[in-house]
Length: 372
Ligand code: SF4
Image 1 (cartoon, rainbow, N blue to C red):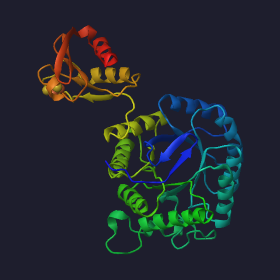
Image 2: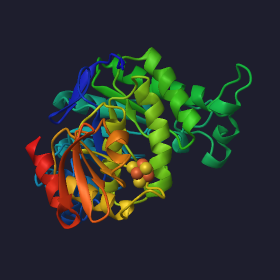
Image 3: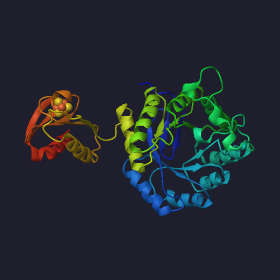
Image 4: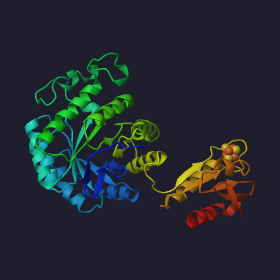
């Protein structure tokens, strides 16, 4: 897969863009003012491989909590700012590693310039976070006194899949919004820029990212916003992010789920592993089970999945429900288990290496994994 060539930058010590691997990030779901709860949640995310964390900064108390959070965590901290430019300045002062600014609701160019100057002084990158749900009114990009959100015209614009002619679309509006803010940053000779173009609608998000990817050199933060609960949101994110990543677009990802943030990290890595863009831990191949199965494959594969969470090496492990077809069907696996009646065959690359009693099959499988 040819990845898009981009400029690179660092968020803390995590490189984004250039030749860096696609990084996986998340956002805290605690009240940022509650330092302990936020730090606890971030530590839980660090444990599962979260590489960058973002926290919402809704008010000055939250902005002032950031330095206390930052000094207790090991991964870079991004301050998520909407509406109030003074919160951005306070976050920069507090030592955050990156800012996320929403051009839909900080629309005064002068204030953006003030933030950029402060970020430039400290070499802090800025993510321009364009979001379908909070775009500036149509015809009023960069204007502070504009129409009310309910009459801003955004919902009347055709989405990517509905455009029939060269009429102005939501994608045009998203791209124009990003370019407006990029222009301000570039005019100040600031290029520590990354951009996101999030929407719930997959075709709109994909099209917006594709368009921007062609016209700016900056790394892109991918996300399908408000994508849903663990199951539906994982599928929606996998499709949206999967299309873009497969085309080589995307330098860091966040899977948004209405669930535990740790789940967002797990899904993020699964997406990258599926596309062979990142290898974090073992890959589990599990048969779906069928009438030939000699064991409860669902239970067994979940048990193996749990055990593999502690494995860091690049290894494909298969759990198959029968001895006859299992090893052949999973011959791509480095090691696997094919359960039979009361016993199990351990195989490597499709070749049988051991036969063990059913009661020992999990420990035998893990021994083989360790031995690789
Ligand atoms: S490995 Fe065996 S049990 Fe599993 S799907 Fe294939 S034939 Fe069915």
